Length: 483
Ligand SMILES: Cc1cc2nc3c(=O)[nH]c(=O)nc-3n(C[C@H](O)[C@H](O)[C@H](O)COP(=O)(O)OP(=O)(O)OC[C@H]3O[C@@H](n4cnc5c(N)ncnc54)[C@H](O)[C@@H]3O)c2cc1C
Image 1: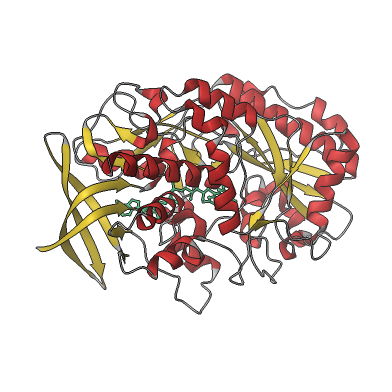
Image 2 (image 1 turned 120 degrees about the vertical axis):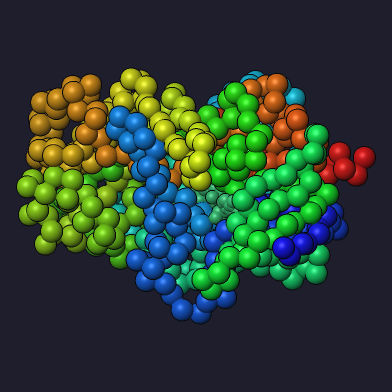
């Protein structure tokens, strides 16, 4: 078996791992990063949407969190992780949530009150987080009008974009400032950094209270080569699902590990008289924040495939919309839940089992969001509104909203999804073993730098916070190593 040695091994190349690598390289450390997925950063060709789903998304974007109803969640699986496929919305956590994190943290509560903003400043600058106002965006304007009609608060949504000229909902012209365009591009210029793509960590070997080596598998064409990687220090950045799962697979398991949160999200489709052509517009650059921190509305990514999925939820009632795609706009209601899900490892099964059961209050918030947003859309002149509820009749006027069935009768039919997962290694779930700064009590030479260490659901897009907290975790670990 091939053997490799390095000072720091980082498992996973998403925003958490990339932010940690920047801190380690800045401190003149030697870093090897391994990533299960492929590296698409050098490709001059553009993948078509189907190939992108198959190659860059985990499980082609169809991973289920089992529950009643199940929630479909999506993650990236390529060099750069989720940032290569995401919308690049860069947001700070609202003060109210930061204050609560500060109180919930045992050791580093102060961080959330002040220093996190220095990390946000650094990240926003590096990713060029900005609002592009180079042409009128009807999809966005309509959301602003809904807010205006109701005197609702809105927040702008800066995005990690530079020189984007394509006006596609998710930038497709190379302007997206993903990790391969920023942090990892810089890291690759440093001789102390090495990246091995198509290389999956299978198991961590421990001896007493230290991680000694990682057994990994590198895919080369159709064969797999086994590699044993020895290191002094280990950084886990495999994401919210895979970081705790890898720990469990390696025999490091304790109560509370793998309890996690996500932002349950439901879509709403609305037809207007006007030609909106949402598929030819950038993602709306505002979100309605009137009902935050628990409920947020915004404009969704739209594509023929997504419209197709929405129409098929209730084909009999929605098929007439198939030739009216230019008049459709798509919105989402996202909640900060009270519920927690669970990532489990079962004997002889090589994939994580993920389950999530929403609480009654979460369904109430989703329903409240659907009704309030739909009222706003009718005020704006929507001709019909269709929530992502299977076999739903659709609402054709504001009055129809009053006839809606009680939420406890229809909640099983909610078609929920999530693209934001976190907190599977949160100290909240086991103060004894999961320590602040991404540390694990039983393993001295390991720290975690990814979404799994967020205290709980942030209620906003998480990438910037994952990067800030990962920077902080790496800094704190370095302070310990450097004495
Ligand atoms: C469609 C979509 C849109 C989104 N839009 C936004 C947005 O606009 N703004 C925002 O803030 N957030 C957004 N998000 C969420 C954001 O992308 C994620 O929260 C973020 O990428 C998580 O970062 P991470 O470092 O924790 O994990 P990830 O980005 O998931 O990175 C983990 C990496 O580790 C690799 N890995 C896993 N297991 C192993 C292993 N055993 N060995 C080696 N490598 C492994 C994975 O392949 C992956 O590349 C979006 C997500 C999606 C899916």
